[in-house]
Length: 236
Image (tube, rainbow, N blue to C red; front, side):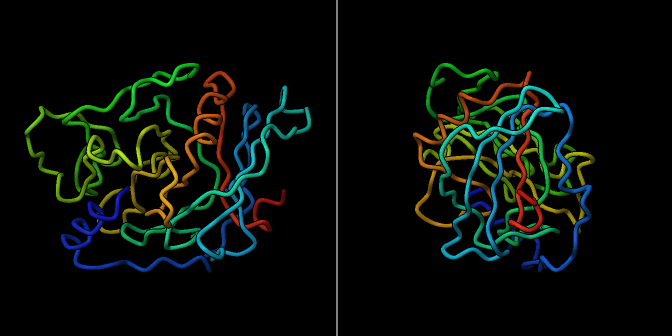
């Protein structure tokens, strides 16, 4: 999510809703599904990592009884300017902790980079991520005719205009099981996207070469998940 579109949404909301990392999550929130054969781990020592930089690691295994094996080197990743939080709220700029699946389609403003295992959609005029917590399509990709201003626009992100952040992106499926809207909505549009040389608005960001390595590695038949939290929470 870009800063400009989120600020518009905050004006509509009437201000920030504070989120606190002090609310503890149980072990079940960091449980890796047995079906997962690919795992991304984004972690830091504390909820407020220096410079909004976390470590980014990748693992794979043959099956649920096999040990996890490292895939790529350990990288740095940018996270949200609101740090890590266990309970996220709209407009707090934070990166949510827990275990999340990867959306079944990847997107980007650049042409398909090739060697992806996921379906890919090159963004065009009219492609939005609906971030209006009162919309029936909240936290979903929505296409409207180019030049049309949808009812959810003031809260949401015009994806095709975010060329720096979104040459390529994968969707982290947060707030989708179920999707919670309304005044206590825990936010929307959390992606794995391009490095910004600045904290994100809650997404996880990598330099382009590393981003493409990960996107080409991920495969839907491997049931990949991303685990985000402090070193103590993830226990790895």
